[in-house]
Image (cartoon, rainbow, N blue to C red):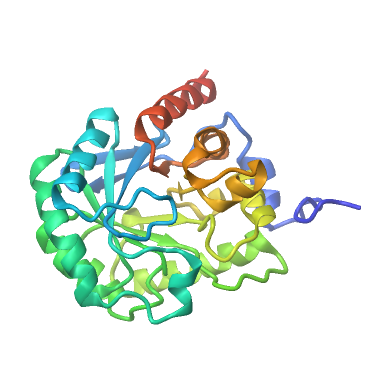
Length: 302
C-alpha cells in the first residue's frame, strides 16, 4: 500500500506539475520583492528570517520580556547573517487558540517598543508577526516593513486593507486548528489561493505576497514531514515560499528531544526545505542555519 500522499500524480494536480517543473536542482521562482529598502531576488539564494519572541510563554523557550535583551538579540541575529527580523508578541502554542488569545492592547505593549528600537538599530528589514490589524498598523508606523500573518488575512477582516494601504509585503500562512485532511497539499494550496484572492481584492499586488504552508499549525508529525517532502508541489502557486520548521514539535517527536535540543533536526528540515524550493527559512538559531542555507544553496546551484 502506498504511503499517504505518495500516489501517482494525476494530470493537473500539484504533484503532476511538481514532477514536471519542480525537480531538485531546477531554477526556482524568479521575481523581486522590495521589503523596506532592500530587494529580495527570489531564486538567487535562500534568505534567513530571525525570530524575536517578545513573550513569556514561547513554545521554543526563547521568549524575552526585556526591551534591551530583545534589541540585543535582534542585533546579534543581524550580525550572524539574518536578512529579516520577525518580531512577535503572542505565543502560537496550541493552548493559545483554545482561548480568546492575547488582547491587542497587551500585544501592542509588548511589541511596539521593540519594533521601534530594533528598526532604528539594525539595517535589515523588520517584520511584525501578528494577525491583528491594529497591531500591524502600529507596528508599521513604528518601522516594520513586512506583515507575517499566521491566519493569512482571515482572522481580522481589516488586515488586508491595512497591508494594501501601507504598500508592504505580507506572508500568508496556512492555519487549520484541529487539522483533519483528505488531501493535505491540495487543501493547503486551495486555502492559500483563497487568501491570495482576499489580498488581491484589497489591492495587494502579486509581488508583495509570500506563502507559508504553516508547519506545525494544525498538522500532525507525519503531515509536517509530508509538507517538507512535497514542498516542490507548492511552487505551482507561483509565489515565494517561506517555511518555519525551527525547533517545532514534529522534530521533537521524531527525535524524542525537547525544544532546546532540536538544532540538528532543524538543520535537516531547513536543508531539505531549501532543496524543495523554500525562499525564506524562519529560524531561532541564525548563525548555524545561515551556514546550512549557504551549503544547501551551493549544492543546488552546482
